[in-house]
Length: 241
Image (cartoon, rainbow, N blue to C red; front, side):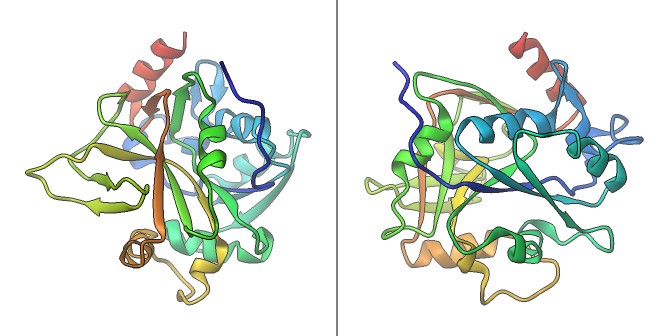
């Protein structure tokens, strides 16, 4: 039995600026976000999910084949879409969000990668995320997938989770973690207030919040597909069809 749509963030940041080098040759002539899976570009898969979860405004960062991205996004009329222009230089995950802060506002947002697709379980995954969000206790809430409940896992890195939902990021190769970040989160923009401008990764921000018990996660009950390369694209397409 699925839940009704809960209140949640109305704004999302969609990270779509990457070069998609592992997706070559598909990305030799188009951005990774426009690679089609089961007849729909990756960016539209995620924007449709966000729209269904109540998102009214999406901020999308662009760099690789940015003109193609802007033209494609202009065709969507079901939500407001703002472009965060990174043509001048790629800013990595943290820097890209910081660069877009003037468009994101100060309320918690959804944060989404474009290379995560999923088949829903009993509860829509973004509803699971909204239900677990508690701004008094957490600054970032990651949507997690249990190891073995998806395709496209790479390496042992991921998360340990305690009974309160607090996360510890681990890269210990001798001990694969039970949970992996599947690329969607609820995020307080203010966590980047002290960060420098320019390019930086979000991972040190995770570590800073983890040390304060403010990095949390909740497992989804669906099946996750990380579309990282052409083989994963083909495997995902087969699952979706």
